[in-house]
Image (cartoon, rainbow over all chains, first blue to last red; front, side, top):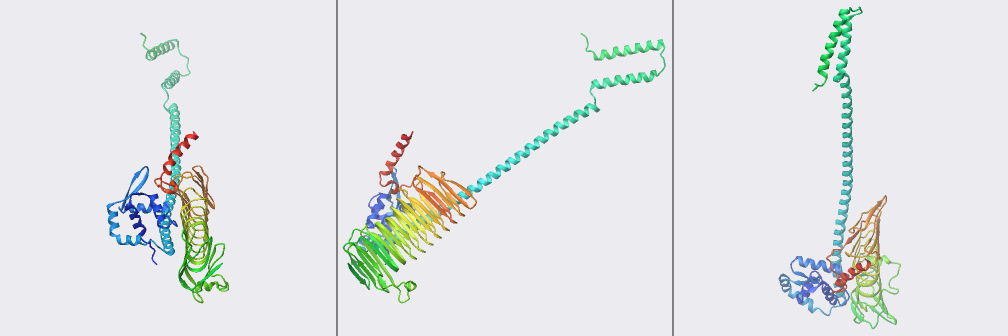
Length: 237
Length: 295
C-alpha cells in the first residue's frame, strides 16, 4: 500500500494549508498534528527547512510580523495547487484511514525529515571540521611565520651589531694608523725640531767652536726663532 | 482473559488495553497512540498463526506465544525454513499505554505514546515519533526518532541513530559503528553519546545553557561555540566548556569517529524554543530583566 503522505504529498498539504490562510510555522505544525490524529507532528528542525525549500522554489513567501515569520502562498504556489487539484481531492477525501496507513504516513514523514536532518548535520559538521582544520593549519603556519620573522629579525640585528662593531673596530684601527704613519701637525713640528737639532749637531761635529762662529750661530737661531714665532703666534692687534 | 488465533488478515478491536507486548520475527509492526477504540489490523500474514491474548488487567500480548516457536531452531525463523513466518500488523492503543516490542527483522513504527516504550530489535529499522520515554535497541537496524520529550535511550551495533526535536530529561545514544546525529530543542536533555567508529554530531539551539565535554581517541573534535576550548594530549583529544549558564550536560566520546557540536542559526524561530507564539516575545524581556537583576 502506498503511503498517503508519500513523496510530495506533505508538500502539497503544506501548500493547501497556506492557501487557506497565511500561517506561522508553528500553526502548520499544529495542523499537521491534527492531520496525523495527534500521533505525530514534525519537529521545528524539520518543518523549517521544508518551508525554506518551498520558498526557494518560489511557491511561498514570508513576511515578518512581531518578529515571527508568517508564510503565505505565492501565485506560483497557487498555480501548483490548482495543477494538482485532483491529488489534493484524494488527500482530503481520505479521512477514514486505517492504522496501517497512518503509521505508514508517520514512517514516511519521519524518514524523510530525518534524512534531511542527517544530511544537514553531516554537512554542517564536515564544514566545521574543515574550517577547524584550516584554522589549525593557519595557526601553525602563523606560528611558523612568526618564528621565521623573529629569526630574520635576530639575524638582521646580529648583522647590524656586527656592522657596528666592524665600523668601530676599523675606526679605532684607522686612528691608530693615523697616529703612527701620518702624525698630527704638532708631532711633525716636534719631529722637525728634533731633526733640526740632529742636523745642526752633525754640521758642528765634535770640534770646539770659536767665539765668532758661536755668535754667528746664536744670531741665526734667534733669527730662525723669530721667524717661526712670527708664523705661529696669532697676529697681535 | 480472552485469546484469538489469527490465520488470515483481519481487524480486531478491544475494550481496554494498558500494556502492549508484541513478539514477531519478520514483517512490520506499527503502534500508534490514538484516542479511538484499541484496534489491531493484521494486513498480511504467512507461516505460523499469530496468537493474541488479552488478560483482565488490559495486558495485550501479540505474537508467537506458546509452543509455536521453539528455541531449538531460531535460525529457521529468519531463513524461513519450514515456511517463512512473517506478519504485517498495526495496532492503535490509548496514548498512555506501555509498549514492549521484541522483534527480529521487523521494520517498526511507534508513535504518539505517552507511556514507556521499549523496542528490542535485531535487523529491522525502528522509527519513533512523538513519544515521551523510549528505550530502543537494535543490532544492525537504524533508529530514527522525532520529537521525544522525556528520556531517549538508543543502542545499536551497526545501525545509525538519528533524532530530531529531542528534548526532556535525558538522551543516551550508544553504537559501535553507526553514526549518531541528534538535533535537540529546549528543554535540553542531559546527553550521553558513545560510539567506537561512528561519528557523533549534536546540534543545539543558538542560545542555550549546556556543560560540554567531548572526547575522542583518534577522531577529530570540533564545535561551533567559541566557549568550547579544545585540547590534545597524545592518545586523546577533547573539548570542554560551559555554554551560557551551564546546566544540562553533554558528554560525547568516540574512539575513531569525529565528534561535532553544532549551533543552530540565530534566525531559527522554532516553536520548540518558543512553545507558542508569544513565548518568544516573552523570552526577550525576561532575558533583559534578568540581566538588570544581576547588575
